Image (cartoon, rainbow, N blue to C red; front, side, top):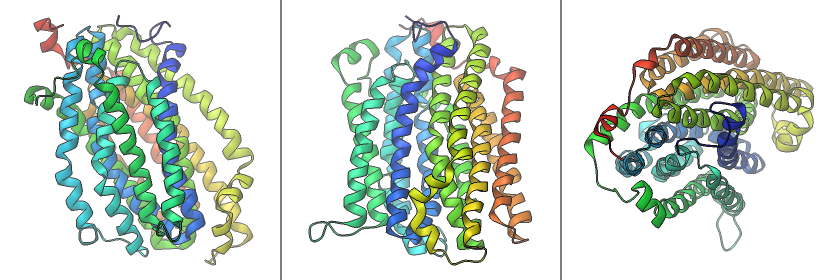
Length: 465
């Protein structure tokens, strides 16, 4: 069977059936980061802002590597669509090997983080959080490599249970490690937040690995084909590297954005930290939907039914529009109470310029801009999922890596930083940046250049099954 669900190919119902478990899984994972922020907001304002800076840099590296290893799902999807079931385990193993190889990158980055990176006013806290995230960095890449086995086949429900349990574990560890339990557990602050989140990802990796090696999967999908296959590795790496570098550069660009906010004032970085926290939390929908689009489109391409891809695109845009209508009620209608509930203590304690009764208004305006940014980003992720499924990742590398610097950082530096403008202008520029980038992706997809790419042509000709 090449169909992922019982619903018509590319329909809203099929895409929703595939994407919903992914969304829940991503939501549970992102809740780990959001939970860290909530605990740290009550622990220390400096800790919260330090994690906004160092955490973004850490995720640039971890997310970049994780995006490369997640490309296992593209090949799994196309092999599944082409009924080459015994080949499915091979690309997953190549990305497992890459994850293990990445220790030689992450460990030195953790050991020498203070010497490599110039952290800002909360340098000690930033360096400590970054160091511990690097020590556990490969666990995230391993998780996305194993997850590709399930995502590519459209069997995503197992990811929900695993992610929810990992999230509960993270919440418990956040409470225990950030604040400590004298005299048994010392107070660790940002280090505790990093360890808690990393333990959550490690737990998911172990659980997915156990399921991956089930007897049924070993015989049906070749999940014990553990040997390093240079040809397959190069194919996965060739497709994954551009996307991984793009993600790393884009997230690193956002890290620079938050560094610039830090250099301007405590108001700028605190408001931006709050906006970033909500942006991270609500991005679960676009992230999960994008991966669902990739799985659906990858299977259609593998079974040579590319004519359904435009239906997948429309279904993705419909689902994204519906989601935006739902969260608009949260960010646009009644955000004040939510902000006070989550961040009240430190909003009251800031004594920078332009602070006081106007601070809540500033946060509200920036949250509206965050909502607009999230809308355009969600649409872009739909097109990104389609292009990834087709293997058109080099285009994503070129446009993504250049646009974040040209469309976001240079304008923020030239307009906001040099003229000492309020933080609202920085988030307005971020909205314009996201809009322009989604338009570029849409044009690329409609041009159809991706149709000339065939990732599994050799296997088709060999007739492997």
